[in-house]
Length: 222
Image 1 (tube, rainbow, N blue to C red):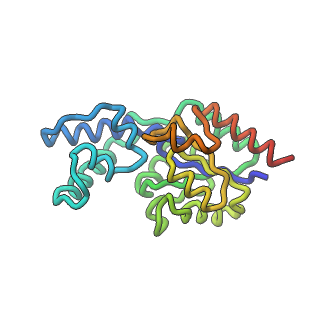
Image 2: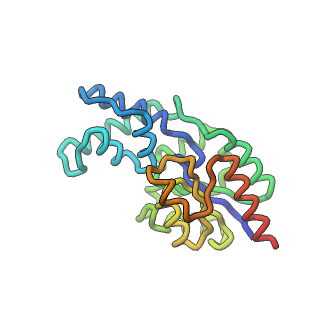
């Protein structure tokens, strides 16, 4: 039986792209660089701040200015956290449904806890989150299964009784390695989602995700 559902955060529950679009383009403008189209930034949000600096400034982490630019981006993000970002449409309905089934739910994200804790605290529907595992809570981030495995231990549920939902191929790999059932969100940000995620059970909207979760729950209860 399904006892718990663990979610990725950005691109799965939270549409964080609008905040990052504003912050990266503001930083580019401040440095006399050409701003990027919204869709280009959106497609790379799930890869984090390092990737955003790479595509925005066209430099590698070995560049002398890289660390400072990344710090500036994260400072801007902190100041603008949730100004434009919000949960995806139907996420509230999804969480209410999961809770109505007496299924635990939590978040395993590659986002630092400094940001993930603030986000969960500021959005009321996340108040009943049973576990939060962020990038600095583990030694190895996804696609390593450490974070998902840690979450399963903390809530006391065996991985085979857990669904893990994410929008990136690294989420699916981590879920499989942890022994959970992966569901891919193709409405998320991952640039190659149509190809890399089609081999998995997937959802094209949050409403579709609820349908797929219901299907899995029904199948596991037989």
